[in-house]
View 1 (cartoon, one colour):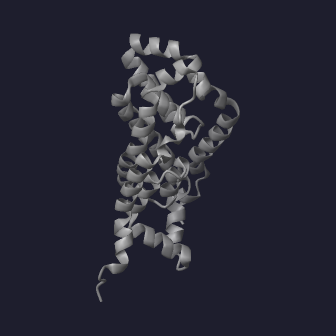
View 2 (cartoon, one colour):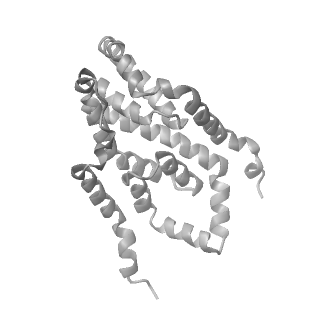
View 3 (cartoon, helix red, strand yellow):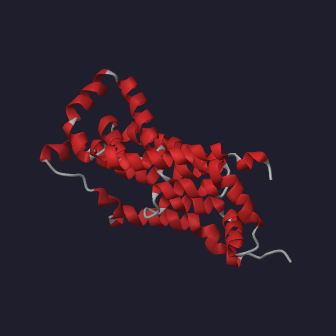
Length: 238
């Protein structure tokens, strides 16, 4: 077995992410909340108005760090992007930062365990090996489904592809496009936060499960799943 696969330092990135996520749950949650956003509303609006380019750079850096380190607050960050920068270009800032942050988790998982684990699974003749080879045949569909179906945790959708040695370009394309519908919904909610703040209320984060939003998402999911659903009906070569 090559020496590089035994190098314990390969685990450092994924271990750092795990530690940061645990620390974030304890110490950062109060600062990455809707209440914190509401209380700092005036200062944030003034900063964006006076330093737009810098505000965009800081926002992107913070959002990427939140996603890459699996810190609590990704939803609040998305709302903040819509609140500070509007639906457009806010949705592109949100989706771009989320994609880059997710890519860092993916690379950390692949560096730490992915290549070695994937090779072992591929060499297996058992049910896990067969499942892995089945997923490999329909990677595009599976990756899109993991992003489009709103019940799949974002962290899970970031790590699993890294552990299964999914190609980076395929991961980036499906992540960027797959999260765009959800990012559009929550950025739109964020763009209307001014009225919510003025009314002293909280945003409705369950809006994504409303029929007029959920049904189109399910339709996209069905479209992504078509290659998997049609596979049993395809003729296989003798």
